[in-house]
Length: 318
Image 1: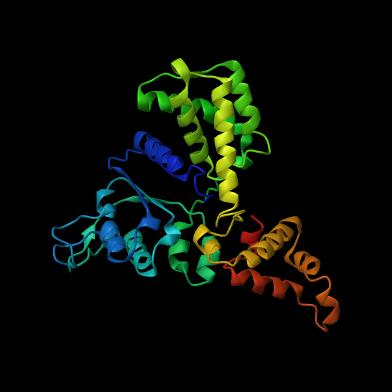
Image 2: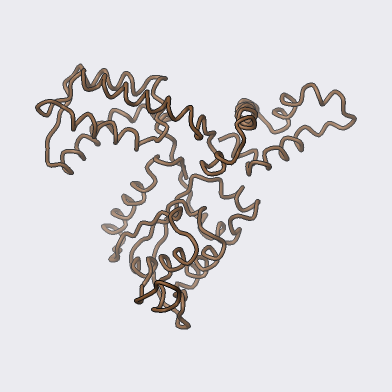
């Protein structure tokens, strides 16, 4: 679990490497972003299809679950899957069998699963958007990855990692002089660095600095130029549809909320995070109107308000 760009895919890949070396996994590591799957495409991609099963199905397709046989599949953003796909996935997890589209013969696949999400799946299940039985099945071990802004002490090590990755990918060694490194880390660890896209922002920043570095050395001038680019990008985002996206509210849902309601919702979420209990938050939020009521139902009123936006008390306090 964790926000977009926090490193869920990289962690899943690392777990696969460890299990392959220590537990003898012999199959592939298969990764799929469930947010890109819709309709027949989702069923076909995950479970495969037989030729002619739908328009455009011109040849048999094994499906990603079959490709992960004896290996591991990482379903990123699993909360984006439709309810039909969730039901098929549950059967595949329990029986290790599933039916490709257009087939009446079950296919077997002995795969291991890691799922990733930036949503509160308990809240999604309560709202009927995620199957409770599937959640119970996959909720064995849960790891929460904090955002980059919440782990600024890791930025120095990740800066070195990104420079090494750039060198391997582009076959070009790039270094930072001491002054440039200190300048970048001072900014990166400070309050001005928003890191809205988390490690994707950091990765992009390193690539730009390394590409523009004169003679393969990142200078203070390179760092200052990159800081200006990052700040401008975050300012533009702050004036766009994703402005101040509260944790727990997904980006798609946020764009469907009126700007007037966004301001109110942000204040409510901030109050929840500053309060010890649901009732305490309700008392603070309804301090005036509660005096005009015969029954004090602050907690219930707050729960109903959060539910309008698909949130629970627990999700608002993340």
